[in-house]
Image (cartoon, rainbow, N blue to C red; front, side, top):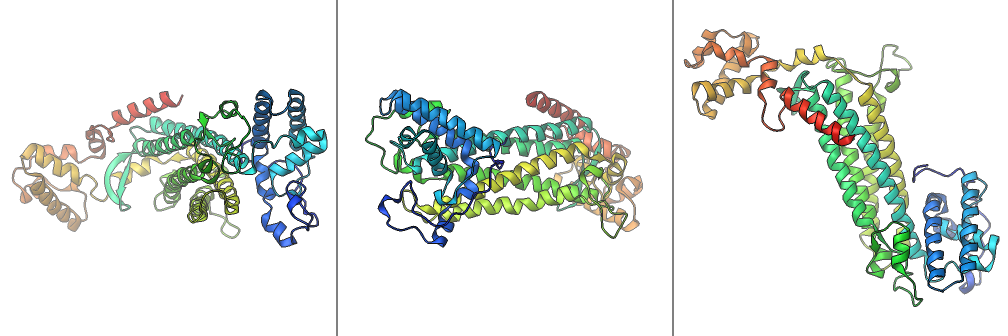
Length: 476
């Protein structure tokens, strides 16, 4: 199960307000119902149960290793946590809203099962360092899942690029025809974008991989704990060096959301192109029934809804980043309950991005490019005008600005006649500049244009084929 998936356990139940047995010694009466409702987070943070149990196992082992609790108590705790994990997996664990969060729900159940050993588990830790640890573990797991999906999507794009390394299509700037490129080159642009997205997730993962456990509430603990032991047991690189920072910052979640939002933006750009390319005026690609829907009234419609919904989810994901930034911006050190609002945006953004990545990979593998249509339009809009200007520089020795001006006059002449540049006569060409020879027509075809772009990173088919092959090797 992915780290953001909901468990199959019972829906958290709302009980009549009562003093919380985990912290209620200071309080004589129960909280108001509305206080209990706004305070509880179990409705969403039950998603952290795996991470919470992992953290508690590591903490119990360390407490026993340092002699803070007995080995017998640690064994009972470990067995009890295993049984609780089985209950949650089976859906028989009932989450209790009165216990506020996943941490107290598990601890209370542990005490029910094993008695006093379960009540000793919380020695030398606080919910503050506990939740910070759990959340880092969850985000780390989610990062690994997103990384794998990005790799799969990059492979889909690189495969399409290898197949269509030499298939011409119009290249656009301002959504106006600019120069011919190849469809494979266009696909590789997204491989590059996604590779940077993947790198951002890797960077964020490296920075988050410090263990808060042992920071306690904010000041550390007087017990002789071994933070290196718990850090290593949970796969962290090191313990967090400052207890205040460890419990009070969520920049690891913000950086993760920033990477998520940038990735979603890239997916949205491709989704927009899919919508355009599927439209009748373009007809560059066709999606099958698997990735389109119909209309309730217009029987001819084939709507690219997977692309449209991927595009739409970008707003939700970007909103998650803005929401958490806004929550964190005014908080003094150390922990404040505002930070309970950190998880839902991360959970929701992760689910939305994971779904969008899967849908995009499906569309890339499903789409059938209309090679003839793209080739037909690749040469329209005077797309080879730059090739003409470059020829004037190379063959006629004109300065580029002069060549640009001459080419502009030739485009205007062709436009007035309602023909393409390649349809002008040599006499028409020489009327604008006498140094033009018949050789100029050799550069005015779509194939000649794309073949000429041999600079590193250019759209020449040989370049595209080589880049696609390199990516497929790396992604394998």
